Image 1 (cartoon, helix red, strand yellow):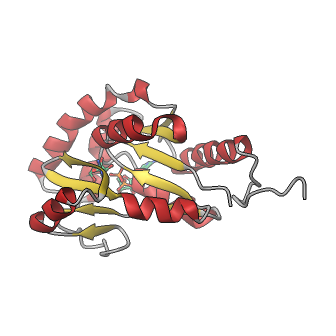
Image 2 (spheres, rainbow, N blue to C red):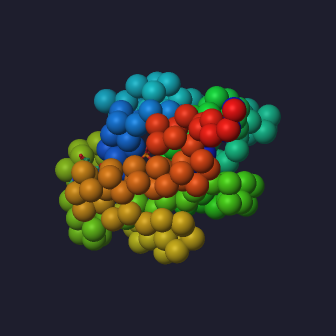
Length: 202
Ligand code: ADP
Ligand code: 5GP
């Protein structure tokens, strides 16, 4: 079976990445979301094992020492990491995987996997709109929002290192563009549009 592709998706916090990725997973076959590990506290709407694996710093350090992460980074004061095993399992089953990781993690994945990954940056229409979305989400304190906005300016500087840039002006349009990128990648690998490997010659 042909293995699935890795889509490495980065965006400044509050851009709308989670909103877009959830719609993609719901709308497309054979696409899964890579569930990261984090030491951040869960938000009220978040579920362990679905949005993240919420673990404490000791367990995170243990996973680091055991070399279980494909990549990991400290982002906005918390630790986040992607398990190598989960990635391997999903892609070997032929599923495309969406990795929601920050610019530091994306750089690590690029160094390890090179061009086998598809790198997508989602940008907000403006920093003012980003601030409105972060405040509107009401999940972070004022201090945390200030840190995330400060980091957003830095993160935007990495935009040129990505294969694709999507501006999340409207969710509908951004979802359509990301769908098109996934479909294009499947076509490049001669897979059907639903993600199943094509049998052109028996
Ligand atoms: P991220 O995962 O990038 O941190 P979220 O998906 O949590 O961002 O979105 C942040 C906030 O912005 C949420 O309240 C979400 O409903 C809202 N949002 C997302 N996309 C848009 C958009 N295109 N226009 C307006 N609001 C948006
Ligand atoms: P949040 O706390 O808003 O869920 O995520 C904050 C930031 O951490 C986002 O930029 C998100 O992409 C990033 N992030 C989430 N999971 C991972 C991961 O496994 N690795 C890395 N490097 N960053 C992650």
